[in-house]
Length: 329
Ligand SMILES: Nc1ncnc2c1ncn2[C@@H]1O[C@H](COP(=O)(O)OP(=O)(O)O)[C@@H](O)[C@H]1O
Ligand SMILES: O=P(O)(O)OC[C@H]1O[C@](O)(COP(=O)(O)O)[C@@H](O)[C@@H]1O
Ligand SMILES: [Mg+2]
Image (cartoon, rainbow, N blue to C red):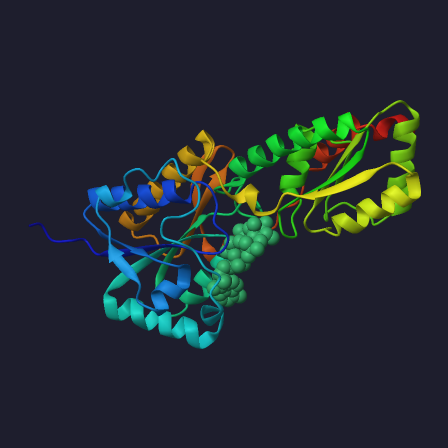
């Protein structure tokens, strides 16, 4: 038997995202093919702290690619947030001979990974979150599937909203970021989009626009409200009271996180998983992997945390024009 090149562990952390399984599969299969032992850690950082991990084989990751969620399970680990938790996790990695930890997660998981790297564990991150709220990358695993799922749900909502001539407030996820809302706003032709990055809390203006909209002949309205603004039931009540238009609120919630990943999520997650192993092969330390201008790339974890990103002004402007706001300017 040939000597192993070393031990790599992979975990998923934070909210699950469709495509995480594809990323794990790519890490495992590429890792094995290049001569590493790859361990799958269960339940995020808790799995390190509780030593819940198994050596994975090529076949262990069969039939996973097409499924949403994460077969390694995920968690939001309170213990790992504490300094003591990170020290303990680093000590366990050292004891078990795990040289590199591949973390598939979002901004919170990467903050944890960055801190863990200070204790001598080499960390490689793959962006896995439906929120798209990670500055260094144009793409995150799961966003594409989540947006498509929400878009289909909102198409259905429009049909009933239209039939009853109602105003519908639909809340989509995104934590404090409005990317899912903006994309659904454009993809569903929403009359209004409320996102935390742009909304000025001017509810009077919003209500005025809804009234004008009706007066111009619009029989129903879809208002996409980002989770970061929230209070959708209260907003629906406020609109109904102020306009006399029957209004309903729908919170799409966790259904946006499930489902079979789109081709984009499968392909990009697979490419990034393989690329993580290439980074290890090249001796790279503490890197985050992402997509920039259509290409997979890696960046130093500290550098990545200095980066910022914002909603594309032009996309937001287009969303406004394609809704009905422009008629009343
Ligand atoms: N500041 C932090 N320090 C250490 N670990 C953190 C920190 N923030 C988050 N984490 C770890 O990452 C996990 C996932 O973070 P969370 O923000 O919930 O999801 P996501 O990574 O998807 O954004 C947390 O439960 C915690 O274990
Ligand atoms: O599943 P939970 O714990 O209710 O968390 C809900 C949050 O998770 C998300 O779905 C994904 O966020 P993360 O990727 O940061 O975990 C957010 O959009 C939402 O705010
Ligand atoms: Mg997050």
